[in-house]
Each structure stands twice: as structure tokens, then as C-alpha cells.
Amino acid sequence: MYVRFLTFVFLFLPTLSLAEDAFTQNVADRPAMNSHDPYEDYNRAIYDFNMAFSDAIGEPVADAYNTVLPSPVKKGISNFFNNLKEPINTINALFQGNVEGGLTSFMRLSLNSTLGLFGLIDIATPAGLDYQKEDLGQTLYKWGMWSESSFIMMPIIGPYTTRELVGSSIDSLYNPTYPHLIQTDLQGRIMLFLGEKFVDYTQIVYLARQVRQQPDPYVFMRESYLQHRLNLIYNGNPPAPNLDDFNFE
Image (tube, rainbow, N blue to C red):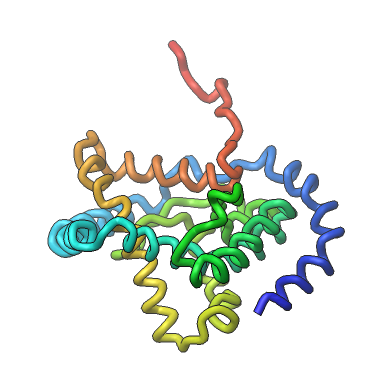
């Protein structure tokens, strides 16, 4: 199932290596996130709906999940869903010219899918192959195709940026996970997507309680999420903010 990946890597590796510096220079002078919030009225309405849903259904179910299941089982489930993302991580890292990141994701997929019992056990991280999320939203920015992405809230599944939302939708269409790792139909894909989102939610459910304690919970969540996406774009090393943008008087 790795033959197509290997063909892609070795066929395009020289071109991708040369492109890496160009991508890095390309992102330097373009703002990644919109400093305004053009969808704020809509976002606040969806935020209120999501918080009500979390109070009534989300948090009780997540608390039950976290209480009933032993930690090793929860860790195995989380590892499994992370492993399903590795083909997309590999492709987008290579598309961005990040050859090292692409090969790391591919090696993680190979090790965890075989020696790690279909991804239930993460043996790649202790081996020095750290997980790095890469998606088409990040790729579009690095290609110079979409600057200043705006924040947007989605019902139930939570915060996105507009670039991330479009990129993730396209990712799902050509995701090689399903034809090569898990052969399933559309209904199966939807169930896996919802399962992944639920597992992610159970890991951060405590943050919802902290967000509510902020003076403006919506703004706190928005700014936190935009910073999270910025960190992903720059692989954990975003550029320092321009001090000229601050008024120290």
C-alpha cells in the first residue's frame, strides 16, 4: 500500500528539495491571518450554540469517556486516529517543499501501521519521529494562493479558519487513507471523521471551562485558535510580531 507513496517521493524529491527555500521566502512577507473578524456576528451565534451543546451533551459524554476508559485504551484510540492522518501529512509536507517533514510522516505511517499494530501503539515518537500536522490549508498559504485567512465557527465541530476549512474539504476528497489503509464507503468516512473529532474534543474538554472564565470567551477562543493555526503554518516557529503594531504610550 506504500508503493504509490514511494513512487511520488522519489519522483518528485529533487524538485521538492529545490522548492523548499522558495516556499520559505514566499511566506515571509504575507500575513497569514485576517486581523479583522468579518463573520463575527455569525461566529458568535454559532459559538453560543456550540457552548450550549457542549453543556447539554458534549461535556457529559466526554467526561464519561474519560472516566470509564483506561488511559492506555484512550491513548491507543488517539494514536489510531493520528496514524490515519499521516498520508495527508506526508503529501502536504512534500507539497510545501518540506522534504524532511514529509519523509518523517511517511516513516511514522510505516512504523506505526506495522510494528505499532495498525497505529494503536505510537512507536515512532520515542524513535525521534515527532508528529507534525500538515493540511492543504497550510499548503495553500505557503503556495501564496490564500493570505489573511479569516476565523469561522462551524456547528458542533468547532473553530476553523476559512483557508483551513476549504483545504480540509479538498484533503478529504483525495485522502489516500481510505483506499489504501481503510477501505470504507462514504458513511464509514463520516463515522471516522466524527470519531476523530470526538476524541480530539475529549482531550480538550477541560479548556471549555477555562474559556468561559475569560472576560470575552469568544474573543479568547478566536485568538487562541488563530495562534494555533499560525504555529502549524510555521511548524512551531512563527515570526515575532512587529513591534510597530503596538502602542506603548
